[in-house]
Image 1 (cartoon, rainbow, N blue to C red):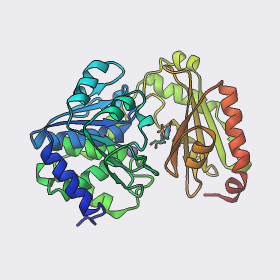
Image 2 (image 1 turned 90 degrees about the vertical axis):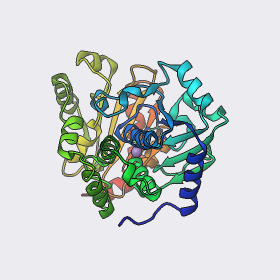
Image 3 (image 1 turned 30 degrees about the vertical axis):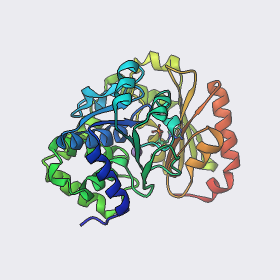
Length: 346
Ligand code: 5GP
Ligand code: MN
């Protein structure tokens, strides 16, 4: 049995709002990852079973390795289909916001959602949720929004209505947000849930292969290149990798090719803090990804130095400037956090 972590009043509220809604829109964050797409599509399939008109809208495209997911072809990308997206949001009587804690995390779609008259319900696991929804289910102690969606559906008595497709999507989000159950994954109930998803007929090994082992040859070569130029700050137990636009085109970079790179330096025996700087191809920014092991708060670094945020061990932000300036900013952060970094080892 799963512990009831979601407040009963919120479950009742979600249930009542679902009953009163026919047109439902689900939105998730920019540069959608496995959990953004997995939680959105998991809920999408459940709502389809309830007979709702439901669509998922995300700000921009998601990586190829998520394209196999059932329902992914019906996802509306706001940057390509603004008119359709605005119409859907305008006609919605309920908007479910999944896997983000601030409207700014859905970019320009935030203005449309913010201005919508529909009821809004946030389901998320990031710290410090903003007050942009009428009701909020926020559980930062839960490792993925997909897990939270499973728990919510179960609490609604909806397990029987959960299809194989829904189960695949939920499993994918749980798997990607925990690095294949290698971090944030010590809660035994995760494995009870996986058991229930396997009962729906999912092939978890196959899902792992589809997500993590279907890259291009050039992606692997890019990884080798990036790692060969890694900076290691030995006394600080930190490492930095980077990727410019020019390097991306040299390796025929496609969206998602650098997914997971930021975790690799953490496999060095003394490294507890890793940073990946990547020049964005669409916006004049450098995307910053931070990861840590143990109690080092990389979300504080993201918030204080890179206009970002996130979880204790996985956070991110943005930098406006050159790659050299971004690296200098990171080194400033290392100095500020030096006492914490030098005190820690694995
Ligand atoms: P990633 O490194 O995979 O892009 O992001 C890891 C986590 O950091 C995300 O799940 C999200 O919580 C957080 N994050 C990434 N980028 C940003 C950002 O620009 N702003 C904020 N507030 N959080 C971010
Ligand atoms: Mn997530």
